[in-house]
Image 1 (cartoon, rainbow, N blue to C red):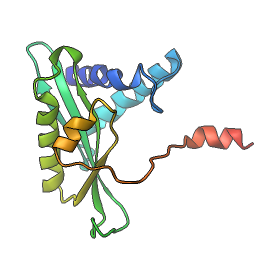
Image 2 (spheres, helix red, strand yellow; image 1 turned 120 degrees about the horizontal axis):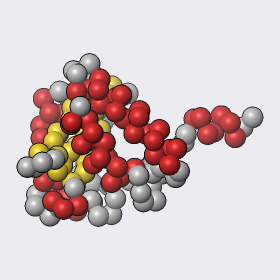
Image 3 (cartoon, rainbow, N blue to C red; image 1 turned 180 degrees about the horizontal axis):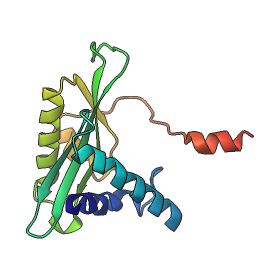
Image 4 (cartoon, rainbow, N blue to C red; image 1 turned 30 degrees about the vertical axis):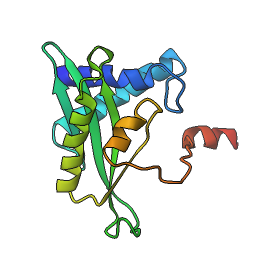
Length: 159
């Protein structure tokens, strides 16, 4: 359970504050994502989710970095004829451990896992601060605009 709580803590740097589309806006939303993430991590870390891999770097007392890699099956494209695609999310380095190469380390591990899992292409979302890391690893802008829609919110707003 220790790693689960540490992964929740690290993901909190992304979802508990800030201005992104996925950031909790209320204490109730913050509690909601944390409960759901704990349950999901329980399945992932138990090995019940073969298409998900969590890369971590541990410090003396706590985890200091993580990345989550997900393989999914999408429709084939020119760059991914098998449709087997990778998605990287929750790349987080504890603020006290930043600028030491730990983000690159967890990314290298996640990308290695995705290659071994047969993914032909990988996508991720980033912040302006994270962009240099990913560009240094070979990621390029897709030229597409990423849009988001909460189906629960859209369903209730149309009734």
